[in-house]
Amino acid sequence: TKSLYYPTLFPVVEKQTLNFNVFENVATVTQAGDIVARGASIRPADRPVHAIISGEIPKIAVKRIMDENVRTEYDIAMAMAKGDANAQNVISMWADDVTFCHDAVQARVECMALQTASLGRIRLTTTNNNGTVTEQDVDYQVLKSGYLGAAGWDVPATAQPISVDLKQGIANGRKKGHYYKYIFMNTDTFAKFAQCAEVIKLCSSYVATMAGVSLTPSLETVNTTLKTLPFLYGVQIIVIDQI
Image (cartoon, rainbow, N blue to C red; front, side, top):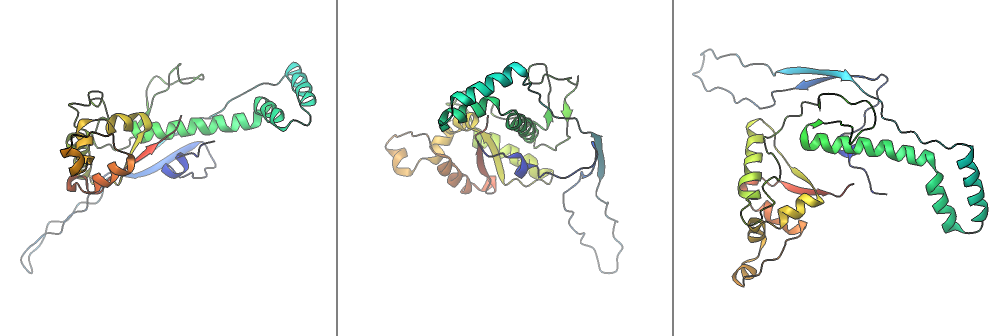
């Protein structure tokens, strides 16, 4: 079982009701003090702008039924597997409804957390959710940098994921007072990123470049290279390997 990312990205907070009310600080940019003559009056500074986000927390649930026939199959299978630990483990995996339901709820929360971190919203459809779906996206009003993702990385020869995409995304964020330390990518996105000609060139050593060698860099090599680029302000990539 892979570890879950959501408890770190979105720490769990105990709540007694299914309503939420969040007091959000919208303006986070620090203001610089004014330079004026001694004894002169100065313009009063604005207070931070706040907004309140509220709503109702939906239920996340999964159901699996074990009727009499299935229970009989389970009892027979366990009896036949007596003394065979491997067979008993397989049967338990098939019939352990409590673990299955628990893991299913955790998987939904994990999916929601990663979607929110990536897109700032969750879209529920009949394809990805069996229950009642909303007609509108569940928008958490997460402030975004304006970076739209790896849409152009499918053409590795011409893509500019570092000098254009990451540079612009970080610059947009800094204008809004957001100073990014990490970039999250899944394994597929990082594979596209690492195969771009620009990334390979920036990550290649001088000797390898002169020899005409083009090797797809590792995550460690990429992050080491990103640290040397001043316009990225030390940002690092974290690859999320999750299904």
